[in-house]
Amino acid sequence: MRPKITIRRAGAHDACKTAAVFSAALKSMDFFPKLHTDDEDLEFVRSFIAEGECWLALEDGRIRGLACIEEDFLAHLYVHPAQHGRGIGSALLHHVKRQRPDGFQLWAFQANDGARRFYERHGCIVAEYTDGDGNEEKLPDMLYVWRG
Image 1: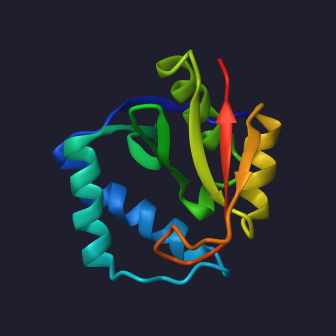
Image 2: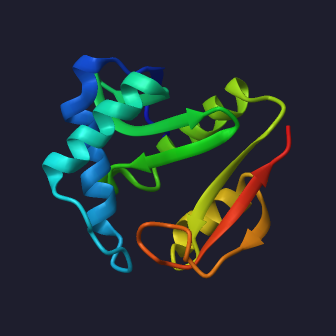
Image 3: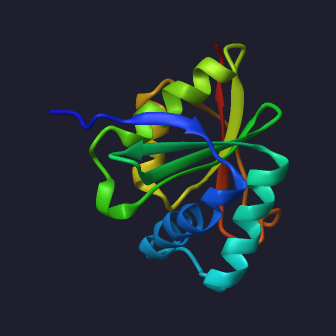
């Protein structure tokens, strides 16, 4: 049975709990170099909640995941690692599709097999591969496109 997930816009009061999900997701990726402290993650999350369009997936009032859109880019989609495989990421991505019915783009790391399967299963198409020179982590990545 799928969890009862609600999606709502993030507010400044959500920053700490959202940052905890964000940090846990990054720490769970064994290929990912954790370049920032949890405090730096919190400041980053505060900034994208304040400046962008950040949506939260909640179950029983608890933040389980987040999706942040910047213009036509899905800049972040993370689900707490303890909640993977429960439909939370799918709920967030479907919400993003409703917010950007004409389509959007997103970056994913080539080493992130789970994310690649997830986005491809949901109709996203690879448009470009890079060697990672353009991202902070210096990891090869790929640009996905979803055309509404």
